Image (tube, rainbow, N blue to C red; front, side, top):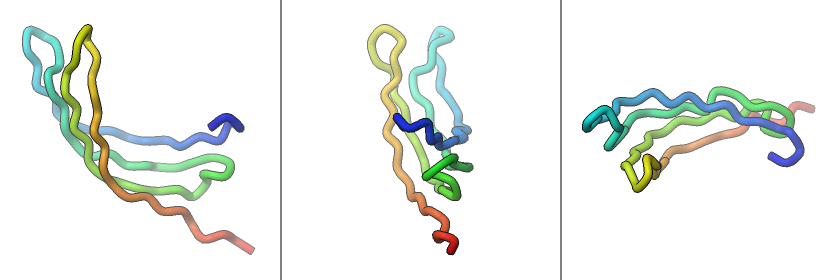
Length: 72
């Protein structure tokens, strides 16, 4: 975020290679923690990637997230 708050994600998947280059990739992701206003943020889901031109990858990401209750 512009104010410096950060969210940390973990992606762990499997890729299909052709001639050493990734063609597709799929797996789960998790939102492990956040800082600043994102502190207490958690989440999980799945992702799927497909190869594009010039070595690019396009990712489709689905899932849910939740924030921790505000403390008084």
